[in-house]
Structure formats: structure tokens, C-alpha cells
Amino acid sequence: MLPLCERVLHTSRRDFLPRRSRGILVPTEPTTIGGHLRRRRLQLGIYQSKAARILGVSMVTLSKWEGDRIYPAWAQRNSISAYLGYDPFQTIPDPKLVAVKTNEPNHVAYLTPAEATGRALKLPRLELQLTQEALANQLGIHPRTLREWECGKHRPIGQGRLSVDTFLGKLPT
Image 1 (cartoon, rainbow, N blue to C red):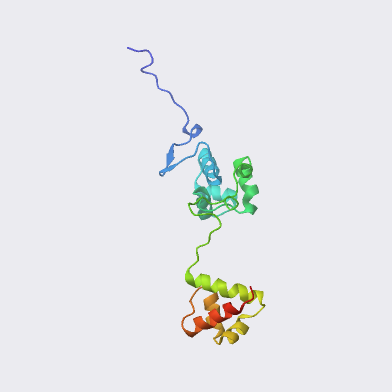
Image 2 (cartoon, one colour; image 1 turned 120 degrees about the horizontal axis):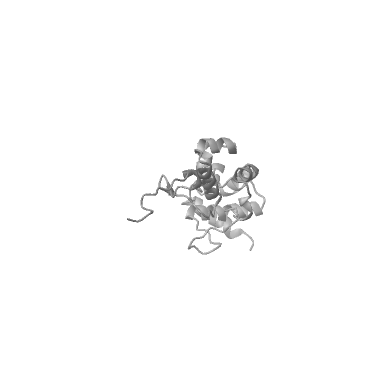
């Protein structure tokens, strides 16, 4: 018989992070603010409600931070740094400042036909320093109709389309 077979090792569980918590992996090397917050909370062995009280935010806000659904506001930076014991903002960039990765070409905006028509009307109107009411009178339409065209809610049709084409054709290039 082997001499170590009857030995049992005991250790405290709080020294180790759980590998999983409700199906969400606990990051060992966090790369997001949410990962840092979640890891620290589990290290302390506290519930989200207590961590939220410590941070001075609601449980919903903390949950969204931990799930990386929202990024903490700048005003929360000091309380987060104090809670973690270090400043994670130095190594993790603000996602609003980092380009979002997509497979769309850069600097391309895809507008619906109504939005494109609205923009084609609004920009020249502003360059000519006309109010919506003044341009609507010039086109022979109601100001509300022009507002709906400019915001992309509707597109001009029929006589309104002819008036818009005439207006856009008169513009100096």
C-alpha cells in the first residue's frame, strides 16, 4: 500500500477563485473593466449587492459593467480604482475611443433613400441660411412636411419631388 493514499489535504476555498460562476467564466487575466470588477468581487467572496454598495452604484449598473454591456462613467473611476486597489483604466482603453471592428469599409454611411433626400435638402438649406418655414414656403409645401423629409421620416413624391429637384438644381455649384 502506498504511504500517501490515506492523506487528505484541506485548504480554504477563499484562496482560490471558482473556475465558473453561473456559466460565466471568471477571468484570470482580465482584459476589460468588467473582468477586473468581477474577478475582484469573487476574490472578496461578496455578492453583487454588496459590491454595488461599496462602489456606490446600483446592482443593475454593476451587472452591466461586469458583463461589459456598458462602460463606467468617468466620475466612477476613483471609486473603481479604490475598490480594485489599482487603476485598470491605464491599461484598458475606453471602448468609445477605440474603433469598432466590423467588416464594413471605413467612413461609409449607408443611408435610406428618405435619409439621403433629407440630408440633400437640409445641408443646402443651412448653407443658404434659410429656416424650414422659409424653404417650405419657397417649395409650396407645409413646414411640417419639410421637417419630415429632412429627418428621413418621409420622401417627397409627385409635385413635392419636382419642387425639391428644382430647388436642388438651382443651387450654385
